Length: 382
Ligand code: PMP
Image (cartoon, rainbow, N blue to C red; front, side, top):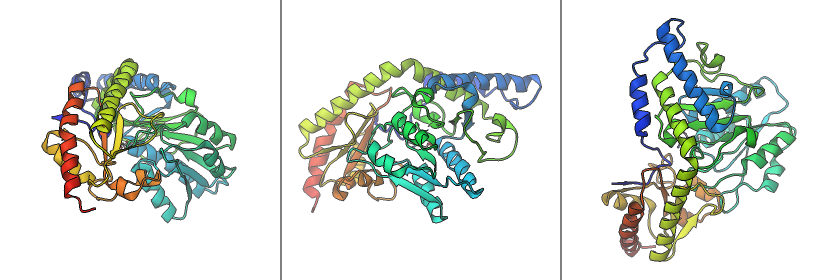
């Protein structure tokens, strides 16, 4: 089988599995003062350092969470609370193509009456700084823009947006979940106040992530309880997963350059191969500012879900738009927000590469995909 759905999730690296298995014996509660507790706490602090090194921030900024969904919700909750308490900065600005853990949260907050603006993106899914400027003002509390899009791979000018946000006195958050291990991510260089990531997108365990919070940025826990993480996130430490995400972080940092080159090579092989072998295809997203392993393609007159299932029968696993949106048969909101025609949005497939993919995988897809598209187009009544 050929797994080309690495933006949905990745398998754990063998070093991660080994470390997690070993860390499962560290059963002491990391908050306990006795030696079992201290042993677990030490392993957690090692992991914290690895994460801080990966995203270039102080270890004290790292707050372990259950994943990027929780991290994103935590950030918005901080500002929701400030707005509830009467802050004059009562507006949040984000974009139309954020992951559902922000996008759906925004719908929820708007329903409750909060003022959230979604800055539109251009036809490549990229934020235009001039457009973003028109959304910013002294009433903005938080600006949240993802680093790289999970569906079309478009990379946002986070550093430039952070500068604009700070110019009006707002805080800046970036969901860097898809960027980790693929492009350099630096909290210091980007000058963002909050950053989210998730372990399972870079060969770490599922159900573990990070919210990095700069020392001077406001914080309020989403989950109240014990004093873990300096009171920033309650709940008994998930020691084994924290150790696992630490090992994954070290690998991601070590292999960044090599991996991103390899991912881009495979992605470009597939893109060129598809454009050569299949007529009338549209490649979505920004081709200059693009996550190296992501390729999103629309096949007019073929349904995305049908393509996915036919490919699956050949042992090739891909996704239609975002996995979070599939199951609904709705066209991708990311593509629609990028101005992609609704017909094209219905026939889109996301191929996302990872460290275990090879050139042979690409060759196999290029053998199996063209006849599938041809057959589906012949069956299509459109
Ligand atoms: N943000 C982005 C950009 C993502 O791709 C994902 C995972 N699909 C998340 C957030 C959520 O991560 P998790 O499911 O681990 O909470």
